[in-house]
Amino acid sequence: MESLKKLAVKFPVLAQLESKTQGKMKQEYSVVVAISLVVIIILSTPIGGILGSLCAVLVPMKETLTLLKQVNPKKEEFRHAVIFWLFFSFLLFLDAYLAFLLGMIPLYTILRFIFLLWIGPCKFGGTAFLYENILAKIPEKFYSYDTPEDAIKSAAKVAKDTFNSTAKNGTSKIQEEGVKKVIRPEGDKKNE
Image 1 (cartoon, rainbow, N blue to C red):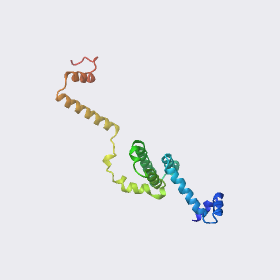
Image 2: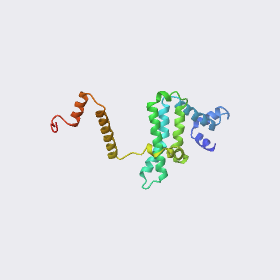
Image 3: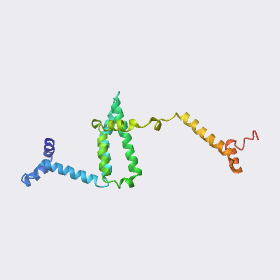
Image 4: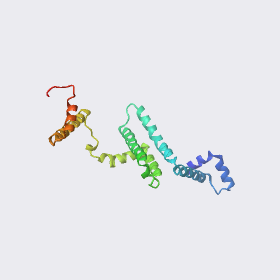
């Protein structure tokens, strides 16, 4: 309540309002009502999503930029930044491609705003909770990738196997001629 009094003193209009209501409307309550009205207006208008995302991103962005400027950042801080941006990008994907469905979820914008504020600042520990309870339990086979060379070899093997199985099962003359042109260009008359 003391912090609300300090905030209310900064606005002389609130002191005038309190004197006009003969002390019935305290300055602190006026601050709470004003903040509540601003939040309701912002979150209930179409621009609320943009402002909510902006507010929820400013603190983590500041923390991330600070982290990038550090010479030896702590592992927990780095993990926090990566997990926050992972979830933020996932929410952006949902907003961009599933907006028609998300519009049917009551209070989605408010819930997303609260979620981002929970995982945004490192002190709330939201990203640590998400990592321990969700991300750490995902099997490694879903996110481990081969080297580019292995991926190319695997793709070449699939293409070769597909070609061989198609050739064994019989293809039309046109398909065979097309395959021969791909394998051996027209200028190459060897082995005919």
